[in-house]
Image (cartoon, rainbow, N blue to C red; front, side, top):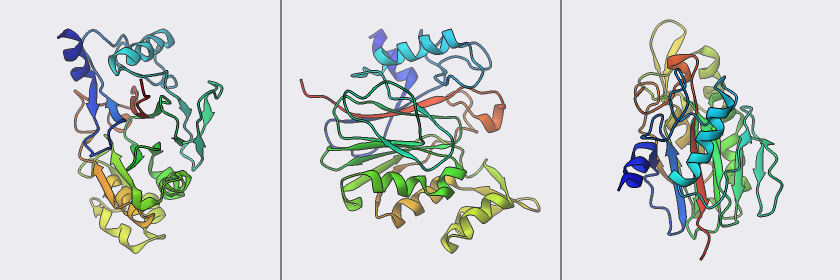
Length: 258
């Protein structure tokens, strides 16, 4: 019973109709008897480049394994807000790869995306043959990381579905002209994702922009996108809100057969 309570306090399950065998979830900021990170990273920080105590992060990552019942240690990426996608296969070395998206068709390979306002996007094939995790801040989104992620999948886009995890929400994420222009210059449809606030600034609907990009790439089944990191400090880290902040992990994998 305690284990179930711990899991429910630490994990947010992806609300998408994924096929049997595909698991998707995001971690939450705090959890019962799990996290060891101290303020301002309290308590279940999984990011190792945000200034937290490395020993606390190592503990949290180890605890993630049993809390989420992972079949293997996650494949962590060195995320750089670019458009590189890496395919992981069983037996690959455990070296951290510089990329902002990962794909695998091998059961038991756990893909991990770290965020604290950026979009974590999961993809899976409808037959559970393949999964992907994408890190999409506004720079990566504008650079085409979503399109690259879809292209890296062997399944046709119409056979894919997507889930958008916790990210900066459209009522709280204010941006400047350079962000708006990065999207509207490429597509007039993107204008609908920006609402003016003060001169030279707009509220930006990142999930809507992601849905537009996914639709243009041929992915019509898109779920999630309703959790705002900035407005929910009890559950989510937010770099925009707090400055110094931990990171949540969004994970996806194909459950290995017994």
